[in-house]
Image 1 (cartoon, rainbow, N blue to C red):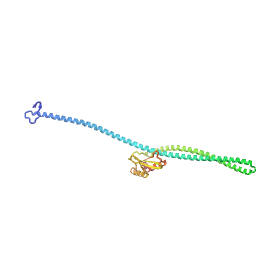
Image 2: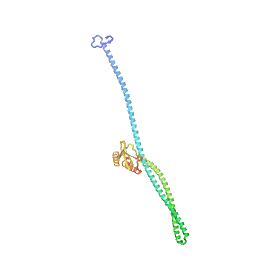
Image 3: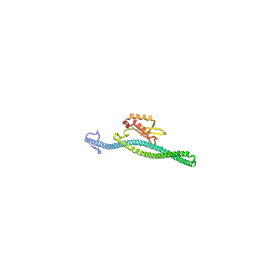
Length: 313
């Protein structure tokens, strides 16, 4: 039964007014509820799909960021290792430069000594020539005296014989000095040629030694490298005759100045901790003030006592 065009849903309506109208109304209500539920489910599913897309995008961005960080760290490590190797090579080249400089200074001192000896010999020769001229003058005066003084003929004759003997001795000494001067000149020229040959041979031998050492290292064992090693850096200089040592421990950002006993204590502690992986990097600045023998002795001492490469030998 309909009342003014609307379905009567009252529960206390009188029987006989149309019980059959209850179920269609209930069906309509349930249909509306189901439609609302379906609409809400569709909205939730759409939101969930959007969230899944955003989550996938975020995860992909995070993965790309992690890959970029990994590549950056690997490149940084490679550059650091390359820098250490280049600095170590630079230190070895500086030591070789010190050695060549010292040899050149020794050659210069030798040449200066030979020049001084030659100058002295030349001075002696000039003095001998002056003495010879003086002897000749005396001989001329004696001849005049011989001509003017016939009464002293015997004495003059003896003096003349004596002067002749002195003249012969002076001439012999003069000839000997001339030969010595020529020999010393030849020796000086030979020394200069030897010095030039030694310099050339040193350069050639240095190149041959480097090539042979590189070939030997390749044949016998791997090259010394800081890759995968614990690197400790030691820097040594000399200022006004006083040695200064600085050390940079693994994981530290800067150098700290230490004395030699403290340096050995630090290196011994690192060797005990990183025996097979300790890489000792020696640095000599360009104006270190050290000689080649001092730099080489310091490098050999630290490498032989603490560096992994020389410990394996």
